[in-house]
Image 1 (cartoon, rainbow, N blue to C red):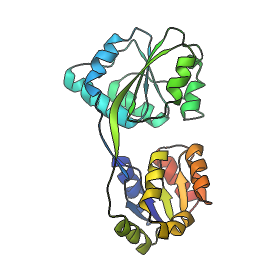
Image 2: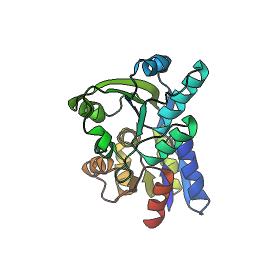
Image 3: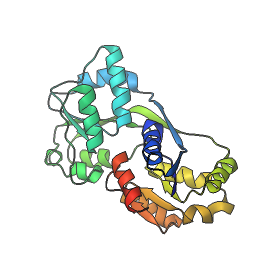
Length: 248
């Protein structure tokens, strides 16, 4: 098994290391880079403007990292009288470790739909909700909490930007080392992957096994033409690693 990891940043590198230690061939080709968001300087004021008992949604570990860095440098702290939410356990654990605050997250279904099923999400009349996210994030949660009576603000904590490559050179490298499995962790990355591969090599791409982290990504991949798709139980590296091992 030779695996192409497109997950960006340190988590992508960590997954490559996990695989290489088992003797599998894995290479890192991040298709997006993560940089600081343009609205981070507004974060201290936005947190101060919330009422006690209001909600803060933190969409990813990237949002935690950049928000925590901003607050620390400005001499601010995460308020203890707010309720914090994440979509997944790993982000919740990371947030708790960085801030010392407790976090709510869906245990059974680690996605936006699972978050919205939490008991605290059912009646949001009069609540203010601050969503800390990246640029161009999914609007589904924001739309749903507004329908349930909340007032929503979104703040860009980080930006995802495409990484430029010599497409032919990178695909040639993947083929030479025998890549037969590709890990994709977002819809955006999947679209960049398809754009990266020249039309003449589309059959190679679609014949690779695709390992991804949600049914939404799997559905798009199927519509593009993939037939061998594996959906990891969760989006963290341990779950992806397990999916790769079990379906190798």
